[in-house]
Amino acid sequence: MNIEIHRVKRKTLSLQVTAEGGVLIKAPTWLPQHEIDSFLHRKQRWITQRLAAAYKTKQEANTAFFLGCKYQVELRRHLKKGLIREKVILPELNSTKALEKLYQAEAKHYLPVRLKELSEFTGITDITRVVITGAKTRFGSRSSKGTIALSWRLMPFSPEVIDYVIIHELCHVRHMNHSASFWAEVTKYCPEYKLLRKILKE
Image (cartoon, rainbow, N blue to C red; front, side, top):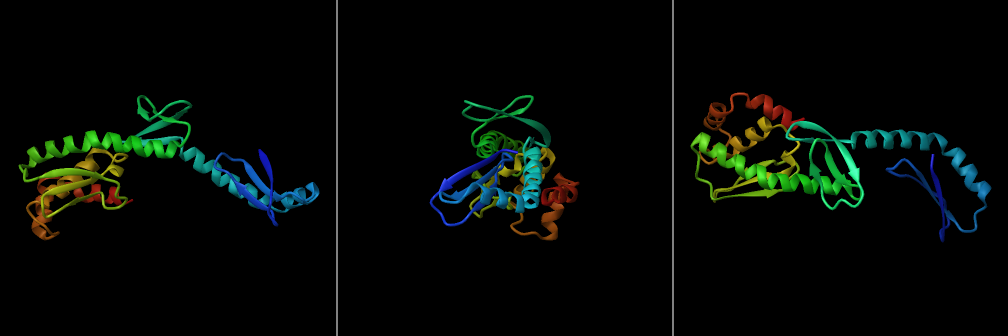
């Protein structure tokens, strides 16, 4: 266990378990070392619990989903942006932010193309434009002016789930509500929509 002690101008001790699995202590400049050791001993159980949680988070962070497929994540120094090959390759610095930017970049290519394909498939072509958003729960929407908005946060999901969201918004071109007629339209182009919607909400 890596323990760092920083002597700073403060009156009390503070304790933090880092995401990398280390322990950071901030201590007053005047405090004797034996008091810091005693403090560590008293907090041993708390530290163990937090380290276990940090390890679990780190393990989960070693994988990423893209279009429904699970990829191993590889971190590299000196890399400027994320890549998808046999693995998801991310810069070592700010990897979470880099993954989000990777999703955003892929969404700008994938989602408009898929929207065009499904628009032709359904025959619903009255769309003025498509915008990519960062909405966390509202994955898709359609405005009264014909703009369809799709969230880049769809990119971890399978193509089938993404298709459902796009079809859902396309059907709003004909039905600006969630009436029986709307759901009948969705069912026509996406018969398994109930299962896909459930996956989306999990």
